[in-house]
Image (cartoon, rainbow, N blue to C red):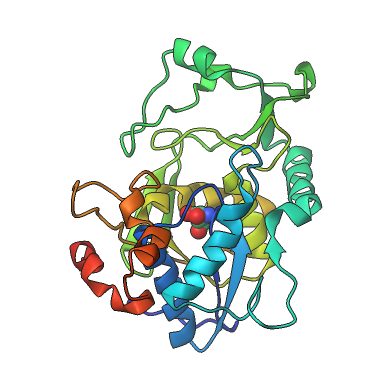
Length: 289
Ligand code: GLU
């Protein structure tokens, strides 16, 4: 199996897509570097996109901090904020109408339904758990059969998954992958009750809108790819290629790096006087496959 991007008729377009809800750590840096390298190897374009669709967790300093830290780390990009070119910043929050149009399309096809159930109510329904990650599968009994029955304000909108169907795809690093709808994952939220798009819809609509040809991201999002493929199919769009990077393990704790591992933050490393960017190879020893 080749780990290279499979050339398609379209020129390569990749993206670096941080969520400004915390400082970036070495796990992000490894993934974003891979996204950058693959775009550069393919002589393509790499864009920068701020995934700022969660106002409750958004902070300005994380947003500008991500750009500063990634520049320090040695990455650059061809479109997006602060890249020295005449480019408008790509901020998802500036194009809510594009996401809304996709939601409306899903609504008109009857593929999503409003769901007012709280987490407590879902748990009380004794839901199945995903064998992949232990997440709760939204109980099919709680599905709304007739959307006109529901209060449609301040509700989550869920995508109804085709129970029992295997969703297959090829990952450019890991090879063939498949997940079973209804068993590995259930009806997932595409629009949140705070009236903002949920991640799964936001990322699909934006990757399509920005004509991304290969999505490079962490392995923790592998199953999200199966959900997202259902959205591509529903919306009638051609999906990009996929490359899921290994997760970086914190050498001290042996666990996956997260925003709580402050010492591994790019900002902390920089302030501690580490050499920037691509010279921090030692941290990646644990992630070789
Ligand atoms: N915004 C996500 C992150 O910061 C990446 C999502 C994606 O690449 O699809 O981890």
